[in-house]
Image (cartoon, rainbow, N blue to C red):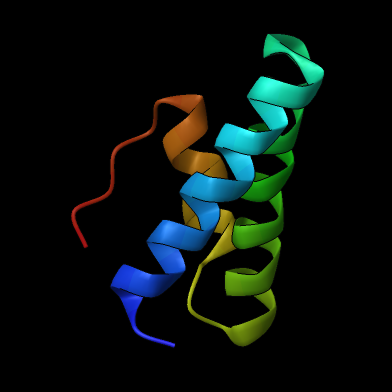
Length: 63
């Protein structure tokens, strides 16, 4: 699946969620998708959890 098709699919899911269930359900689904993407990247080794936590704490990294 190309990135464009994947983006269209995500957009369609979010639009349908908003139109059928309302704003708060849309927001919940969007946040759940972001968390799922972060967990998936961490499991694949493409995301350093320690670096992410440092960034959330406001610590800067030179790397």
